[in-house]
Each structure stands twice: as C-alpha cells, then as structure tokens.
Length: 163
Image 1 (spheres, rainbow, N blue to C red):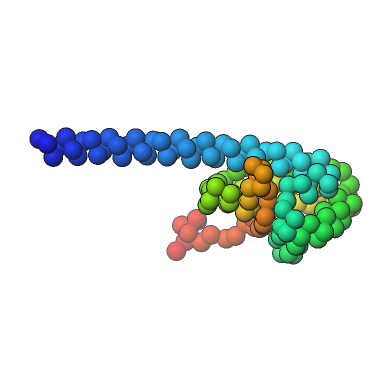
Image 2 (cartoon, rainbow, N blue to C red):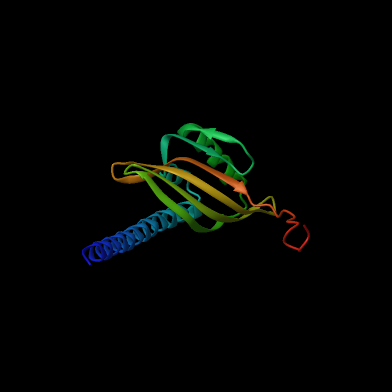
C-alpha cells in the first residue's frame, strides 16, 4: 500500500509538472506571438528607421532570394532599396509556428509569412517559412538573425496514392 501511495503521489507530481510546463509554454508562445505582431506592424509601415530598431547592430538576414545581408548598414541599404522599389506599402500576413527560449536572453521562433508586394506594376511576394534568432537586450527582444525560405509547391508522389 505504501508503494502504491508513493507511485500515486509521483504520478500526481508528474501530471502537475506537465500542466505547469504546458501553461508556461503557452504563455511563452503568446508572448512571442505578441512580439511578432508588433514586428509586422513595423514592417507594414515600411519605415526603414523603425524597422532597423527591431535588429541588433550586427544582425544578419537571408532573404527569400538567398542573399545574405550583414550589419545595420547592410540591412539599412537593403531595406531602403526594397522600400524604394515598392509601388505601394507592403501587406504582410503572418502566423507564429513555434517559439522556444534557449536561454533567458536567446530564443528561436519560426513563422509563416505571406507577402503581398506590388513592384513595377507586378504582384510579387508570396508565402515563405521564416525563422529568427532573437536576443534580449535591455529587456527587449531584437532580431540577431533571420531567414526567409519561399514555400514552393512540390509534387508528393505519396499524396495521390502512388508509391
């Protein structure tokens, strides 16, 4: 009977720990979701100075074209060129997919993005899957590294029943 009670107590503690962890993960996810929502509000404005405040001074970014841009000066030049090409302000939709804190001052998030861009009268942009490494400085998350990978439809032979 004593072993049974010990096992029941251990199971109860394990269940409590899992519930607490799930609530913590949900709170963390919601916190990063709110952060990402703010990032996209700044992107939607297409104000380069506002956008640059989202990044660290040494940040790097891999764009959907595969180019690597490094540092504040490189990011500024890249964003300035991008904004000048636009016929109108960009429209982005996004959805946080995952978020996890590596250390109290480092996190990784992944998110989906759909960019509606008009350049030279042509509709461009589209769906990408993105990831970002964030660092916390002065109690504020900043982007240290991000990348955007275009989502391209691929033939899936198993989807149609072919093997």
